[in-house]
Image 1 (tube, rainbow, N blue to C red):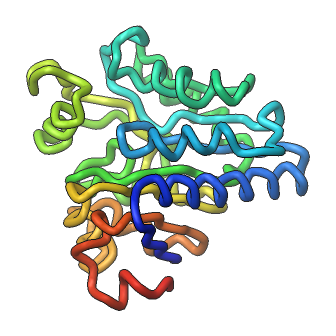
Image 2: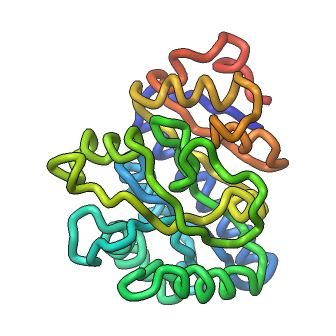
Length: 251
């Protein structure tokens, strides 16, 4: 694992976008196409804004998969991750091949159908974040580290739901859906490379636990340390609780 600590969120976003674009270009050069997984949420906004403006990137050769989505939320809702991706990545980049998790009807069927497409070929790079409770995608603690299903149905814990209120996506806790579709932990780890983007002081304890505590389902993002090719991009605030060794020296 490489840990890169940047001066601020802007510098973090620029560096992560440069790396992500290079990964995509490399896959296109090697195979003529690239398959990516995209995360959402407030922590990814600056990163995606920079990524879609990266030069010489053939988005027409990119196939994108959705990381997670609330159950029972319309695509028009301001907190919908489908809307988020359409407005912040798919539309601006011009991606024409994408698979969104539209649960309007049968979430289990969506898991099966999108999961089957996902498994057709390897994913070149996954973009992920870490939640305030150290969740990975919507795999809240204690996360399922064993299932090999590509997508699973999950219940969202109170801290995860409170984070969505704190970020301004919902007015009250009661407005936040209590369940979601999430890419499984094992499926995320199947990506050839992972670019993890984690800014902000409110993520500092989750970052510390994920990098310094034992790998454990109670700290879902700790599992990222088992991946052979991952870069975690932090800013000074999100890295503020790391030991000097962790913060200053990439592994």
